[in-house]
Image 1: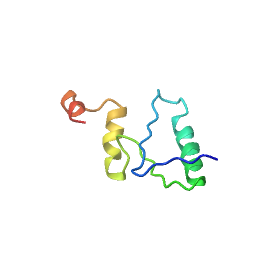
Image 2: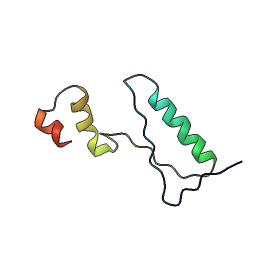
Image 3: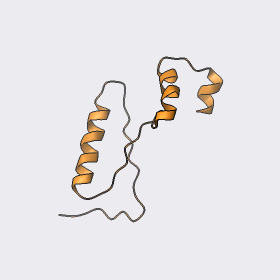
Length: 72
């Protein structure tokens, strides 16, 4: 089997609309990478950390001002 040569790491993003299976695919891909011995970090934006979750919730329900959205 051929292995990936990643001396500096890799950033992979998943794009798509709501409820299209992105989270499922991310979990499967992360598990596959881990199985092959690659360390993984899974995040989501915005709201990838507990302290940023309130921002994500406001963004999803339309509670940000245009200026706040611009700054994000």
